[in-house]
Length: 132
Image (cartoon, rainbow, N blue to C red; front, side, top):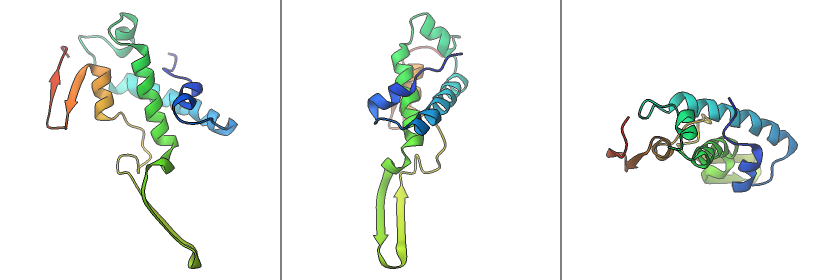
């Protein structure tokens, strides 16, 4: 199955990629696409690809989620919340956002809501707009 995005989609929302980063992006996009296909539950008995094919889900929404998943993994440095640098003795530390600090690719709750048609409200409860 084809991936949901290409490296140029990542560049469009982030920055130009080097040749080496483009190779990584191709692999990460394929990985994210497999994760979306494997982790998103059936909606009304349809897979994500079937929902796209039948017009129930826009391919661009899926592409946006895949690109964001890849950007989170490839742009770890963008998620630094706190950083300190000591000139003498070369001490350097950084605190990363807890959601990306592990470097593990994931589908965020709001992204899963986009892919399933569910609205996620503050994690307290969710409202299903369509059947599952």
